[in-house]
Length: 462
Image: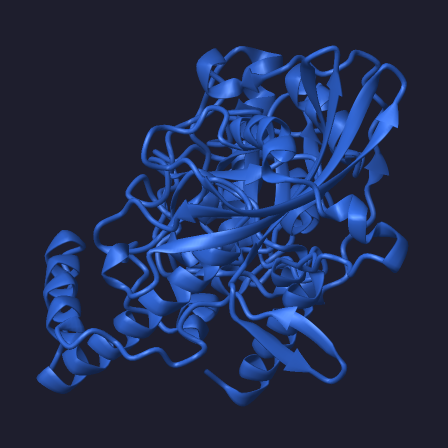
């Protein structure tokens, strides 16, 4: 890792650690209140644990560790303030579980109302921790990243990793030019398994991280090949703000089930995510307004959009302008994807789709959901933190690790919903169907996770 990237990574980790809630030391007059007997805490604690585990499959449920609490009268009932550690399995993937840490500790603050024998969970704040505590100045914080304390690796670890790497090469059809390169890629792969485990320990959602087709790439290689630095560097062309959709958002929505989304595509070794995000949006708009779903050409944008930089990145706002100025988009069949810059070969006579304008959407996620359900899939940009190793589940990284100011990947929102009471966005990616959940990424909805709400836009088709 480059020194600057390493410094930023460590800074982000320290910021993340600072966000982990540390139980406040009770004042002298509170000591007795926090010293409730375990029998008094058992019922509300079990209820809070059941709510935490709600919807989880057997083998993935957390168990109660240590707990302390206090209680006060609240109307006709008792309000319990609980602080508890929960132990939950770290990974269900046997490949990832070769690494030494096998479970993570979660520190939770709960407020449970016991009213006439009925429990109600009023508040739940949880964050990953490790029971090891490190001194930092006059404060203490939880050092919750596995592998940072240099625990000794199992004696057969290298042999196991070599076996797993061999399986990876077979699964993803990897070949290397020399034994030296293969050995280097094994080293990168092993380091990446450690990185994936760190990301796993920090994630607050249900996502599982581990081996993917990108596991033999360094962080720098992955960013340079597959991501889009222009999203955070280039000034965005101002678009008019869309009119607010008055209807409230339905509880869930999925445009895939309604025929508005083409199959998952693969941008290849090219930072052209911006083109795929925009064509996906236009495909949906054309379907909803003209009744026909067409797979549109990203290559046309790579070759003919002179405001953007093809495989070096681009902006959706520029791409809309390019489509309008060119006179439309050809289909994938007529102008096929090559994954590198070519001479522009666009023909207005072959164009099958056009757009009239483009609009910027609200940054309010409830309004985004309402707009999506009524108007169609949305082009957005996100911070791709952790996506190199994402396998499935709902990702919910800590905010300092997935800053909304560091967006670097354009994708397509095609729906939203809830899994086990966890709200999510359904995101169509452009890394092929052999990544993520058959090419899709699920991201926590409602907190601006990874900047999903900062650059939402759509084409307008009249």
